[in-house]
Image (cartoon, rainbow, N blue to C red; front, top):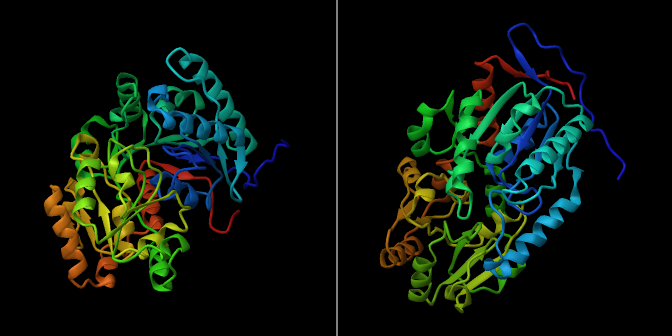
Length: 407
């Protein structure tokens, strides 16, 4: 493939005492090509591109797929191979995605670090990035962070990734400690996690998720119902997002869906679980949909769900879909987790299947004001979240090498 250098402004020499960055190297927690683009890091990169060149490095993986996963093993391998085949791809005027090739497992660790460093350095040079702001969400990036000679480092502590099922907890915990010590600022989106870990960081900042309010509001007002939902009878109860064993409470959902046979359960997102509920006649598994289409699926439902497991992972998380659900103007039924304490209305909370089913009935029966629900997230734009981060960096004399009106 012919190399393409993305256009960027000439670098501005840094002033005394100020560290400027002429681009961003983001080690994302998601794969750009098959994960939802509502993720915090992707939303930030979309906006940082307006200021400096951005290289988004697809997730380099927290675990090695295992044959014991059955059909999912083959799907994960195929998905990663397809991502690798894309290599380096521009996706905007000054935004590109790199899918680095890596060697899985502990035996490939040293080789992978060397290979990753070469691939990222080469891609950064193609984009003219010489003094990068290193933005890390994927923990293994800690092992090459200093070798990239960043102007500054942001560590996005969105989840407790060391608790991810099948991951090397010892290695990832070490990466977490290294990043907290290295980062100019560690970003938390969950107050629960922030309060427990801020003292272990060189510098910590709490920045909540944002939301594309216009995207979700316009979808709701359009009245357009996706074609694959039109034939599903109302009332419709929806869940949008990835369905994984460590987050989604299949046992609870199974009992709820069976107890409400007159309701249609619409599931939009990748499903990695194998459970009897997936074959129930009132459950409709539609699979993944592009981020721009997701709001229309939410708008086509009458109630939206968050049936989370009660575990340490969920306790530490702040799901971005909570704000998206409210932006869609739909009532929400959820199992309890700490972030809900910060939401003033709009969410019915139930811990067990019986109360969860009753809460769905209550949400369907009681009138709700979509504008009041949207009001709870109005002002929580992704642009405002980025400004918070940039102000925090500026307070530490870290500034983007850009000026208004420059491209």
